[in-house]
Length: 298
Image 1 (cartoon, helix red, strand yellow):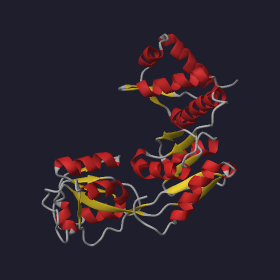
Image 2: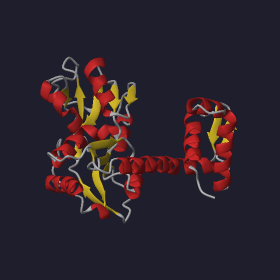
Image 3: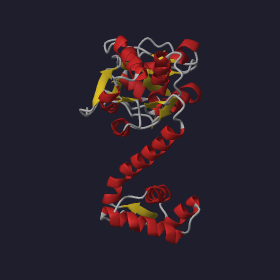
């Protein structure tokens, strides 16, 4: 028995909706059809994928293990269809990167490609998902956080991107020559907790000899910057993300002392088999030319 694409898409619809009935509505099929497809998939896999919870159906352990493969199967199928239908056009250049780092990665990729006729497609995903998509051939290049390095991929480090504090031009800390950790702890903070040193910073903040004010942990850097610019927060973000705001004067640097030992380190990942692709090589060469020892925005 083989896995049917419609069973996989039905499985993912149930995951999104946490309900067989709502999944049926979004797919414009009957609920028995959804039940039949999930049951067929369970027979092929030999395990139950869902169980009932207080707020609808939830994944079993087997379902949680299958879910990322279901996403990859769906994406690979869509990629295959697109490749065949666009046989007379240059293939798109597919880039995987988390949304927090697009401000840094997209200009780098476009600059490396120059006047190429390749259309660029940006895929928002976490590092482990990007690695999996590279190995599946769904991406051409990926930008990931340091971690496991599968043998089928090549890696090149980008320059470390230091994390800095920023605030609005009318904030009380603007222009201060030195801001201690205890002073910082009394401020409302917008935290983009990525990179090496994030946990050490939080430990230092919580260890400051004062009551820590409320903070907001932002998964994306844009939200942290917006809170600093418009709502009186101090944002802790990558220097490259704050660069244009500092240049325009819409944000001011906060002179935290001692200086933060906190950087965000990105790595370019490519498939070894893609070495002959001129676009992949152009991006890899750009990253190599930057060198891992140089800091700042790209």
